[in-house]
Length: 465
Image (tube, rainbow, N blue to C red; front, side, top):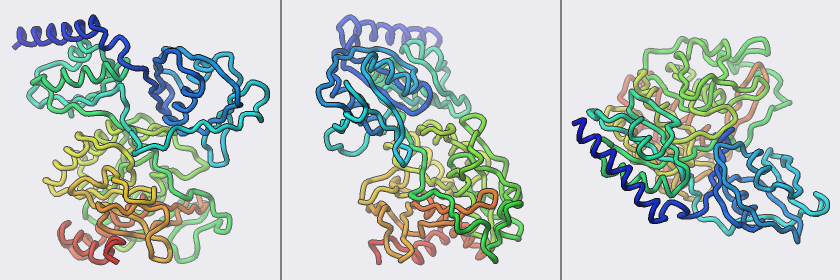
Protein backbone atom coordinates (compact mmCIF):
# COMPACT_ATOMS: atom_id res chain seq x y z
CA UNK A 1 0.00 0.00 0.00
CA UNK A 2 2.81 2.42 0.88
CA UNK A 3 4.58 1.71 -2.40
CA UNK A 4 1.36 2.31 -4.37
CA UNK A 5 0.90 5.58 -2.51
CA UNK A 6 4.38 6.69 -3.55
CA UNK A 7 3.66 5.73 -7.14
CA UNK A 8 0.44 7.73 -7.11
CA UNK A 9 2.24 10.77 -5.72
CA UNK A 10 4.87 10.45 -8.42
CA UNK A 11 2.18 10.27 -11.13
CA UNK A 12 0.43 13.38 -9.81
CA UNK A 13 3.68 15.36 -9.59
CA UNK A 14 4.67 14.22 -13.06
CA UNK A 15 1.27 15.16 -14.48
CA UNK A 16 1.52 18.64 -13.05
CA UNK A 17 5.07 19.03 -14.31
CA UNK A 18 4.02 18.06 -17.83
CA UNK A 19 1.17 20.56 -17.76
CA UNK A 20 3.53 23.33 -16.71
CA UNK A 21 6.01 22.39 -19.43
CA UNK A 22 3.22 22.48 -21.99
CA UNK A 23 2.24 25.92 -20.77
CA UNK A 24 -1.25 24.85 -19.71
CA UNK A 25 -1.14 26.31 -16.22
CA UNK A 26 1.60 28.86 -16.77
CA UNK A 27 -1.03 31.33 -17.95
CA UNK A 28 -4.29 29.53 -18.65
CA UNK A 29 -6.22 32.75 -18.09
CA UNK A 30 -6.17 35.86 -15.95
CA UNK A 31 -7.93 35.59 -12.62
CA UNK A 32 -9.35 37.94 -10.02
CA UNK A 33 -10.66 36.20 -6.89
CA UNK A 34 -12.55 38.41 -4.45
CA UNK A 35 -13.87 37.52 -1.02
CA UNK A 36 -14.81 39.87 1.82
CA UNK A 37 -12.51 38.35 4.43
CA UNK A 38 -9.22 39.91 5.45
CA UNK A 39 -7.07 37.89 3.08
CA UNK A 40 -9.61 36.96 0.46
CA UNK A 41 -8.37 38.74 -2.67
CA UNK A 42 -6.06 37.15 -5.19
CA UNK A 43 -5.12 38.70 -8.53
CA UNK A 44 -3.17 37.49 -11.55
CA UNK A 45 -3.79 39.86 -14.48
CA UNK A 46 -1.69 41.23 -17.33
CA UNK A 47 -2.27 44.40 -19.36
CA UNK A 48 -5.87 44.97 -18.33
CA UNK A 49 -7.23 48.37 -19.23
CA UNK A 50 -8.77 50.37 -16.38
CA UNK A 51 -12.39 50.01 -17.50
CA UNK A 52 -12.08 46.23 -17.71
CA UNK A 53 -10.54 46.09 -14.25
CA UNK A 54 -13.14 48.31 -12.61
CA UNK A 55 -16.05 46.47 -14.20
CA UNK A 56 -14.61 43.17 -13.03
CA UNK A 57 -14.12 44.44 -9.48
CA UNK A 58 -17.66 45.83 -9.46
CA UNK A 59 -18.99 42.48 -10.65
CA UNK A 60 -17.22 40.26 -8.11
CA UNK A 61 -17.29 42.59 -5.10
CA UNK A 62 -20.72 44.20 -5.29
CA UNK A 63 -19.14 47.64 -4.83
CA UNK A 64 -20.54 50.72 -6.56
CA UNK A 65 -17.71 51.98 -8.77
CA UNK A 66 -17.60 55.23 -10.75
CA UNK A 67 -14.87 56.57 -13.04
CA UNK A 68 -14.10 59.99 -14.51
CA UNK A 69 -14.28 59.86 -18.30
CA UNK A 70 -10.88 59.83 -19.94
CA UNK A 71 -9.09 58.13 -17.04
CA UNK A 72 -6.86 55.46 -18.53
CA UNK A 73 -4.25 52.96 -17.41
CA UNK A 74 -2.89 49.50 -18.09
CA UNK A 75 -2.72 47.24 -15.06
CA UNK A 76 -0.54 44.18 -14.52
CA UNK A 77 -0.57 42.66 -11.04
CA UNK A 78 0.01 39.38 -9.27
CA UNK A 79 -0.66 38.88 -5.58
CA UNK A 80 -2.77 36.77 -3.23
CA UNK A 81 -4.04 36.63 0.37
CA UNK A 82 -4.74 40.38 0.39
CA UNK A 83 -7.55 42.43 1.93
CA UNK A 84 -9.99 44.23 -0.40
CA UNK A 85 -8.64 47.67 0.58
CA UNK A 86 -5.02 46.66 0.06
CA UNK A 87 -5.95 45.03 -3.23
CA UNK A 88 -7.46 48.28 -4.55
CA UNK A 89 -4.38 50.20 -3.43
CA UNK A 90 -2.08 47.79 -5.27
CA UNK A 91 -4.22 47.61 -8.38
CA UNK A 92 -4.71 51.35 -8.83
CA UNK A 93 -1.23 52.42 -7.79
CA UNK A 94 -0.85 56.13 -8.63
CA UNK A 95 -4.38 56.51 -9.99
CA UNK A 96 -6.52 58.84 -7.89
CA UNK A 97 -9.42 57.27 -6.03
CA UNK A 98 -11.59 57.67 -2.96
CA UNK A 99 -13.64 55.04 -1.13
CA UNK A 100 -16.63 55.60 1.11
CA UNK A 101 -19.97 53.89 1.74
CA UNK A 102 -23.45 54.38 0.35
CA UNK A 103 -26.43 54.91 2.64
CA UNK A 104 -26.98 51.17 2.87
CA UNK A 105 -23.35 50.44 3.68
CA UNK A 106 -22.20 49.21 0.25
CA UNK A 107 -18.64 50.43 -0.53
CA UNK A 108 -18.47 53.13 -3.19
CA UNK A 109 -15.26 53.69 -5.16
CA UNK A 110 -14.61 56.82 -7.24
CA UNK A 111 -11.67 56.74 -9.65
CA UNK A 112 -10.69 60.09 -11.19
CA UNK A 113 -8.12 62.30 -12.94
CA UNK A 114 -9.16 65.68 -11.55
CA UNK A 115 -11.60 65.66 -8.62
CA UNK A 116 -13.73 62.89 -7.05
CA UNK A 117 -16.98 64.60 -8.10
CA UNK A 118 -16.02 64.10 -11.73
CA UNK A 119 -16.22 60.31 -11.35
CA UNK A 120 -19.80 59.80 -12.50
CA UNK A 121 -19.56 57.03 -15.11
CA UNK A 122 -20.84 53.83 -13.50
CA UNK A 123 -18.62 50.81 -14.02
CA UNK A 124 -21.20 48.10 -14.51
CA UNK A 125 -20.52 44.65 -15.81
CA UNK A 126 -22.68 43.30 -18.63
CA UNK A 127 -26.12 42.10 -17.58
CA UNK A 128 -25.33 39.12 -15.37
CA UNK A 129 -26.78 35.67 -15.56
CA UNK A 130 -27.26 33.64 -12.39
CA UNK A 131 -24.66 34.62 -9.83
CA UNK A 132 -21.63 32.35 -9.67
CA UNK A 133 -20.92 31.69 -6.01
CA UNK A 134 -18.03 29.35 -6.77
CA UNK A 135 -14.63 30.26 -5.32
CA UNK A 136 -12.59 29.49 -8.43
CA UNK A 137 -9.26 28.68 -6.80
CA UNK A 138 -10.61 26.38 -4.08
CA UNK A 139 -11.76 22.78 -3.83
CA UNK A 140 -13.41 20.79 -1.06
CA UNK A 141 -12.17 17.24 -0.65
CA UNK A 142 -13.69 14.50 1.48
CA UNK A 143 -11.57 11.40 1.84
CA UNK A 144 -13.15 7.98 2.08
CA UNK A 145 -13.65 6.63 5.60
CA UNK A 146 -11.20 3.79 5.05
CA UNK A 147 -8.63 5.97 3.30
CA UNK A 148 -5.08 5.70 4.60
CA UNK A 149 -3.88 8.64 2.49
CA UNK A 150 -2.65 11.80 4.18
CA UNK A 151 -4.36 15.01 3.08
CA UNK A 152 -1.08 16.77 3.80
CA UNK A 153 0.73 14.59 1.24
CA UNK A 154 -2.08 15.03 -1.28
CA UNK A 155 -2.08 18.82 -0.87
CA UNK A 156 1.69 18.99 -1.17
CA UNK A 157 1.66 16.94 -4.37
CA UNK A 158 -0.99 19.22 -5.85
CA UNK A 159 0.72 22.44 -4.78
CA UNK A 160 -2.30 23.33 -2.61
CA UNK A 161 -2.64 25.02 0.75
CA UNK A 162 -4.94 23.46 3.36
CA UNK A 163 -7.01 26.38 4.65
CA UNK A 164 -9.65 24.31 6.44
CA UNK A 165 -9.61 20.83 7.87
CA UNK A 166 -11.98 18.61 9.83
CA UNK A 167 -10.22 15.32 10.40
CA UNK A 168 -13.29 13.75 12.05
CA UNK A 169 -15.30 14.29 8.88
CA UNK A 170 -12.23 13.80 6.68
CA UNK A 171 -13.31 17.07 5.06
CA UNK A 172 -10.69 19.53 3.77
CA UNK A 173 -10.64 22.92 2.09
CA UNK A 174 -7.81 23.28 -0.41
CA UNK A 175 -6.69 26.59 -1.89
CA UNK A 176 -4.68 26.85 -5.12
CA UNK A 177 -2.70 29.65 -6.70
CA UNK A 178 -5.31 30.14 -9.42
CA UNK A 179 -8.39 28.67 -11.06
CA UNK A 180 -6.41 26.71 -13.66
CA UNK A 181 -4.45 24.88 -10.95
CA UNK A 182 -7.70 24.04 -9.13
CA UNK A 183 -9.24 22.66 -12.33
CA UNK A 184 -6.19 20.50 -12.97
CA UNK A 185 -6.25 19.21 -9.40
CA UNK A 186 -9.96 18.39 -9.63
CA UNK A 187 -9.28 15.98 -12.47
CA UNK A 188 -6.42 14.30 -10.64
CA UNK A 189 -8.36 14.01 -7.39
CA UNK A 190 -11.40 12.55 -9.13
CA UNK A 191 -9.29 9.57 -10.22
CA UNK A 192 -7.71 9.04 -6.78
CA UNK A 193 -9.23 6.00 -5.07
CA UNK A 194 -8.69 7.53 -1.63
CA UNK A 195 -10.99 10.47 -2.42
CA UNK A 196 -14.71 10.14 -1.83
CA UNK A 197 -15.89 13.54 -3.08
CA UNK A 198 -14.31 16.50 -4.85
CA UNK A 199 -16.45 19.61 -4.91
CA UNK A 200 -16.23 23.33 -5.50
CA UNK A 201 -16.37 25.63 -2.50
CA UNK A 202 -19.07 28.29 -2.70
CA UNK A 203 -19.58 31.64 -1.02
CA UNK A 204 -22.57 31.75 1.32
CA UNK A 205 -23.50 35.37 1.85
CA UNK A 206 -24.09 36.64 5.35
CA UNK A 207 -27.87 36.58 5.84
CA UNK A 208 -29.31 40.07 6.07
CA UNK A 209 -32.98 40.77 6.62
CA UNK A 210 -34.74 43.12 4.24
CA UNK A 211 -35.34 45.45 7.19
CA UNK A 212 -33.09 45.49 10.24
CA UNK A 213 -33.48 48.76 12.11
CA UNK A 214 -34.25 49.80 15.68
CA UNK A 215 -37.89 50.75 16.18
CA UNK A 216 -37.79 53.99 18.13
CA UNK A 217 -41.54 53.83 18.66
CA UNK A 218 -41.13 50.66 20.75
CA UNK A 219 -38.53 51.31 23.43
CA UNK A 220 -39.55 48.27 25.50
CA UNK A 221 -41.50 45.15 24.66
CA UNK A 222 -45.27 45.69 24.56
CA UNK A 223 -47.40 44.46 27.49
CA UNK A 224 -48.37 40.84 27.27
CA UNK A 225 -45.59 39.94 24.85
CA UNK A 226 -43.72 38.00 27.49
CA UNK A 227 -40.55 39.96 26.67
CA UNK A 228 -38.48 41.64 29.32
CA UNK A 229 -37.60 45.26 30.00
CA UNK A 230 -34.38 47.07 29.14
CA UNK A 231 -32.83 45.58 32.29
CA UNK A 232 -33.93 42.07 31.38
CA UNK A 233 -33.45 40.13 28.15
CA UNK A 234 -36.63 38.76 26.54
CA UNK A 235 -38.11 35.76 28.33
CA UNK A 236 -40.46 34.89 25.52
CA UNK A 237 -42.09 31.99 27.33
CA UNK A 238 -42.46 31.33 31.04
CA UNK A 239 -42.73 27.58 30.42
CA UNK A 240 -39.72 25.32 30.61
CA UNK A 241 -38.56 23.71 27.36
CA UNK A 242 -40.07 20.33 26.66
CA UNK A 243 -38.21 17.14 25.94
CA UNK A 244 -38.89 17.36 22.22
CA UNK A 245 -36.79 17.72 19.09
CA UNK A 246 -33.59 19.77 19.27
CA UNK A 247 -33.40 22.58 16.71
CA UNK A 248 -29.99 23.21 15.17
CA UNK A 249 -29.78 26.90 14.25
CA UNK A 250 -27.10 27.18 11.53
CA UNK A 251 -26.48 30.91 11.41
CA UNK A 252 -24.39 33.76 12.71
CA UNK A 253 -23.52 33.85 16.41
CA UNK A 254 -26.36 34.35 18.91
CA UNK A 255 -25.93 37.18 21.41
CA UNK A 256 -26.82 35.00 24.37
CA UNK A 257 -28.94 37.21 26.60
CA UNK A 258 -29.73 35.90 30.08
CA UNK A 259 -33.33 35.08 29.24
CA UNK A 260 -32.19 32.65 26.56
CA UNK A 261 -30.18 30.29 28.70
CA UNK A 262 -32.93 27.82 29.59
CA UNK A 263 -33.82 27.38 25.91
CA UNK A 264 -30.30 27.05 24.52
CA UNK A 265 -27.86 24.21 24.41
CA UNK A 266 -24.19 25.12 24.60
CA UNK A 267 -23.49 27.06 21.38
CA UNK A 268 -21.10 25.59 18.84
CA UNK A 269 -18.81 27.46 16.46
CA UNK A 270 -16.75 26.33 13.48
CA UNK A 271 -15.25 29.79 12.85
CA UNK A 272 -13.56 30.66 16.12
CA UNK A 273 -14.58 33.03 18.88
CA UNK A 274 -17.75 35.00 18.05
CA UNK A 275 -17.40 38.78 18.05
CA UNK A 276 -20.84 40.16 17.28
CA UNK A 277 -21.46 43.89 17.90
CA UNK A 278 -23.30 44.85 21.08
CA UNK A 279 -25.31 47.71 19.58
CA UNK A 280 -26.95 45.83 16.70
CA UNK A 281 -28.90 42.61 16.82
CA UNK A 282 -27.25 39.74 14.97
CA UNK A 283 -29.10 37.61 12.45
CA UNK A 284 -28.59 34.57 14.65
CA UNK A 285 -30.09 36.36 17.65
CA UNK A 286 -33.14 37.49 15.69
CA UNK A 287 -33.70 33.94 14.39
CA UNK A 288 -33.30 32.51 17.91
CA UNK A 289 -35.96 34.86 19.24
CA UNK A 290 -38.25 34.21 16.27
CA UNK A 291 -37.99 30.46 16.91
CA UNK A 292 -39.00 31.03 20.54
CA UNK A 293 -41.91 33.24 19.53
CA UNK A 294 -43.22 30.60 17.15
CA UNK A 295 -43.21 27.76 19.68
CA UNK A 296 -44.03 29.77 22.78
CA UNK A 297 -46.54 27.24 24.15
CA UNK A 298 -44.16 24.28 23.98
CA UNK A 299 -40.57 25.37 23.27
CA UNK A 300 -37.86 22.98 22.16
CA UNK A 301 -34.20 23.39 22.98
CA UNK A 302 -32.20 25.31 20.38
CA UNK A 303 -28.58 24.53 19.48
CA UNK A 304 -26.93 27.65 17.98
CA UNK A 305 -24.11 26.90 15.53
CA UNK A 306 -22.02 29.83 14.31
CA UNK A 307 -20.78 29.31 10.75
CA UNK A 308 -20.05 32.96 9.88
CA UNK A 309 -16.80 34.80 10.66
CA UNK A 310 -17.71 38.15 12.18
CA UNK A 311 -18.63 40.66 9.50
CA UNK A 312 -17.93 38.28 6.63
CA UNK A 313 -19.59 35.87 4.28
CA UNK A 314 -18.85 32.22 4.81
CA UNK A 315 -18.54 29.20 2.51
CA UNK A 316 -20.19 25.84 2.05
CA UNK A 317 -17.20 24.29 3.84
CA UNK A 318 -18.25 25.96 7.11
CA UNK A 319 -21.96 25.27 6.50
CA UNK A 320 -21.26 21.56 5.96
CA UNK A 321 -18.99 21.46 8.99
CA UNK A 322 -21.50 23.31 11.20
CA UNK A 323 -24.48 21.25 10.05
CA UNK A 324 -22.62 18.00 10.69
CA UNK A 325 -21.61 19.27 14.15
CA UNK A 326 -25.25 20.09 14.97
CA UNK A 327 -26.44 16.64 13.87
CA UNK A 328 -23.65 14.91 15.81
CA UNK A 329 -24.64 16.94 18.89
CA UNK A 330 -28.23 15.72 18.80
CA UNK A 331 -30.12 18.21 16.59
CA UNK A 332 -32.93 16.55 14.64
CA UNK A 333 -34.43 19.67 13.05
CA UNK A 334 -31.97 21.89 11.18
CA UNK A 335 -32.95 25.52 10.56
CA UNK A 336 -31.08 27.01 7.59
CA UNK A 337 -32.20 30.64 7.44
CA UNK A 338 -29.57 31.23 4.78
CA UNK A 339 -29.22 30.64 1.08
CA UNK A 340 -27.99 31.89 -2.24
CA UNK A 341 -25.07 29.53 -2.41
CA UNK A 342 -24.02 27.31 -5.27
CA UNK A 343 -25.11 23.74 -5.86
CA UNK A 344 -22.78 21.94 -3.46
CA UNK A 345 -22.50 18.18 -3.84
CA UNK A 346 -21.06 17.86 -0.33
CA UNK A 347 -23.90 19.80 1.28
CA UNK A 348 -26.51 17.89 -0.71
CA UNK A 349 -24.92 14.56 0.29
CA UNK A 350 -24.94 15.58 3.95
CA UNK A 351 -28.60 16.57 3.74
CA UNK A 352 -29.43 13.28 2.02
CA UNK A 353 -27.69 11.36 4.82
CA UNK A 354 -29.58 13.39 7.41
CA UNK A 355 -32.97 12.89 5.75
CA UNK A 356 -32.37 9.14 5.69
CA UNK A 357 -31.83 9.33 9.47
CA UNK A 358 -35.12 11.18 9.97
CA UNK A 359 -33.66 14.67 10.32
CA UNK A 360 -35.77 17.56 9.03
CA UNK A 361 -34.09 20.41 7.13
CA UNK A 362 -35.96 23.72 6.79
CA UNK A 363 -34.40 26.39 4.55
CA UNK A 364 -35.12 29.88 3.19
CA UNK A 365 -36.15 30.35 -0.44
CA UNK A 366 -34.20 33.62 -0.73
CA UNK A 367 -34.84 37.36 -0.73
CA UNK A 368 -34.73 37.95 -4.48
CA UNK A 369 -38.15 38.19 -6.11
CA UNK A 370 -38.69 35.66 -8.86
CA UNK A 371 -38.30 31.92 -9.24
CA UNK A 372 -34.53 31.48 -9.16
CA UNK A 373 -33.34 28.15 -7.77
CA UNK A 374 -31.84 28.72 -4.32
CA UNK A 375 -29.70 26.25 -2.42
CA UNK A 376 -29.89 24.55 0.02
CA UNK A 377 -33.68 25.17 -0.06
CA UNK A 378 -34.05 23.52 -3.49
CA UNK A 379 -32.42 20.21 -2.53
CA UNK A 380 -34.76 17.19 -2.45
CA UNK A 381 -35.88 16.46 1.09
CA UNK A 382 -35.54 20.08 2.26
CA UNK A 383 -38.65 21.99 3.34
CA UNK A 384 -38.29 25.28 1.42
CA UNK A 385 -40.08 28.30 2.90
CA UNK A 386 -41.01 31.61 1.32
CA UNK A 387 -42.38 34.71 3.05
CA UNK A 388 -45.74 36.45 3.13
CA UNK A 389 -46.38 40.16 3.57
CA UNK A 390 -48.72 41.42 6.35
CA UNK A 391 -51.53 41.22 3.76
CA UNK A 392 -51.05 37.46 3.59
CA UNK A 393 -49.88 37.63 -0.01
CA UNK A 394 -46.40 36.73 -1.22
CA UNK A 395 -43.90 39.34 0.00
CA UNK A 396 -42.52 41.57 -2.75
CA UNK A 397 -38.93 40.47 -2.08
CA UNK A 398 -39.54 36.72 -1.74
CA UNK A 399 -38.43 33.96 -4.10
CA UNK A 400 -41.33 31.72 -5.15
CA UNK A 401 -39.61 29.03 -7.22
CA UNK A 402 -41.17 25.66 -7.90
CA UNK A 403 -39.13 24.18 -5.04
CA UNK A 404 -41.04 26.23 -2.42
CA UNK A 405 -43.34 24.06 -0.29
CA UNK A 406 -44.84 26.47 2.24
CA UNK A 407 -45.20 30.13 3.18
CA UNK A 408 -44.98 31.82 6.57
CA UNK A 409 -45.03 35.48 7.74
CA UNK A 410 -41.82 37.26 6.85
CA UNK A 411 -41.77 39.83 9.66
CA UNK A 412 -40.78 39.47 13.30
CA UNK A 413 -40.22 41.96 16.14
CA UNK A 414 -37.23 40.97 18.25
CA UNK A 415 -35.28 42.56 21.08
CA UNK A 416 -31.70 43.23 22.10
CA UNK A 417 -31.21 44.70 25.57
CA UNK A 418 -34.76 46.04 25.59
CA UNK A 419 -34.53 47.72 22.19
CA UNK A 420 -37.04 46.51 19.60
CA UNK A 421 -35.89 45.57 16.10
CA UNK A 422 -37.93 44.60 13.07
CA UNK A 423 -36.51 41.82 10.90
CA UNK A 424 -38.04 40.82 7.62
CA UNK A 425 -37.21 38.16 5.06
CA UNK A 426 -37.58 34.54 4.05
CA UNK A 427 -35.10 33.73 6.83
CA UNK A 428 -37.70 34.94 9.35
CA UNK A 429 -40.39 32.89 7.63
CA UNK A 430 -38.11 29.85 7.84
CA UNK A 431 -37.67 30.26 11.59
CA UNK A 432 -41.44 30.55 12.04
CA UNK A 433 -41.92 27.37 9.98
CA UNK A 434 -39.33 25.44 12.00
CA UNK A 435 -40.89 26.54 15.26
CA UNK A 436 -44.44 25.71 14.13
CA UNK A 437 -43.42 22.16 13.23
CA UNK A 438 -41.49 21.69 16.48
CA UNK A 439 -44.48 22.92 18.49
CA UNK A 440 -46.82 20.48 16.69
CA UNK A 441 -44.49 17.60 17.53
CA UNK A 442 -44.25 18.73 21.16
CA UNK A 443 -47.96 19.32 21.70
CA UNK A 444 -49.53 16.55 19.61
CA UNK A 445 -46.79 13.93 20.12
CA UNK A 446 -46.74 13.14 16.40
CA UNK A 447 -43.91 12.22 14.06
CA UNK A 448 -41.87 14.71 12.07
CA UNK A 449 -43.49 13.58 8.81
CA UNK A 450 -46.98 13.97 10.25
CA UNK A 451 -46.13 17.46 11.51
CA UNK A 452 -44.68 18.51 8.15
CA UNK A 453 -47.77 17.27 6.33
CA UNK A 454 -50.08 19.19 8.66
CA UNK A 455 -47.93 22.29 8.41
CA UNK A 456 -47.90 22.35 4.59
CA UNK A 457 -51.66 21.87 4.51
CA UNK A 458 -52.13 24.83 6.85
CA UNK A 459 -49.49 27.02 5.17
CA UNK A 460 -49.48 26.17 1.46
CA UNK A 461 -47.11 27.89 -0.98
CA UNK A 462 -48.39 30.89 -2.97
CA UNK A 463 -48.91 28.74 -6.07
CA UNK A 464 -51.57 26.76 -4.16
CA UNK A 465 -53.55 29.86 -3.12
